[in-house]
Image 1: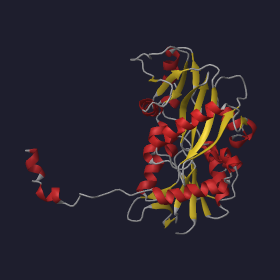
Image 2: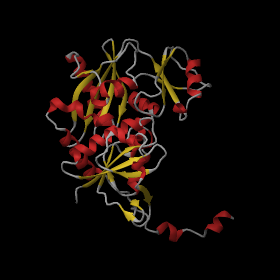
Image 3: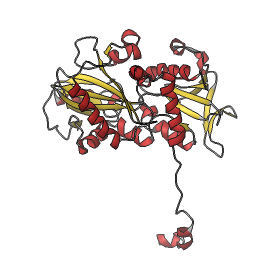
Image 4: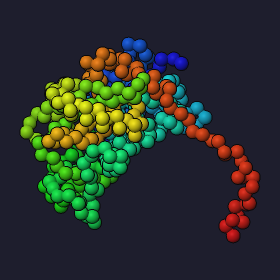
Length: 360
């Protein structure tokens, strides 16, 4: 096994720009030990091999990044190619946020290409990206979660507004809005591509707080320090601007770290996380987002590929950023499995009558 990795970032997603920042950081962290290739996934669903020394500003109207276009071949020698030459890659570090990079699409592609990858499996990707499916799983396992309702003109919610409107599939805080009534939720969700795969609403909790914690299951189950984000204004949601644009974004956002919360709340978070980790197959580093309202905790959502891979949340735990990412790579090399063909031995084909007779 060689040490040649590729980091994929970008993608046709509303979180395209943030993914570039995360990917560039990951590539630089890993380059101290590994030979790292940078693969840029463009907004219009094209793939490019780009230079390793690029900075974020280089992805703004820079035609040079489009010189080495990658094609994907699925044949007897599947993989990524430049012209007719295959790019030799041992493993992919997935730094894509939202959209097809985090919803299982990229995971399916890499599995078919027989390339190991970091981060969530196909199943976990789909489960955590679908806000309604995630709610249903948490609710059925007695994990505290706010009631959700699928926005539809045919069915009214069972709880009163005001509501938080969210895209059913999507990450970050893009498309998340507070609305006073259900009619407004229908109007907004019907007139924006952000909700073209559906929308959900949940009860708006005034004066609630966000608490974020990173989790991993390899080499053992670990939880990071708990973060309390500081909102930049009086808006009652932890917005996209708060997460990614204030103070340089990503790791520069304002926060309490560790959060100034009671031992009882910390213990309750750990209790919920223990139950959550027994239900959901977490690979890589995920970030679990909680809401706290009047000493009541609710799981809000899970980011399976969080911004900056949530590396900054582990600083007081004694893990370096390289160590955390290297553990993700070791996990990916040891945990992926291939499909089984057991039972497909031709017996059913030999015993079957001709197809024409079955149609007659």
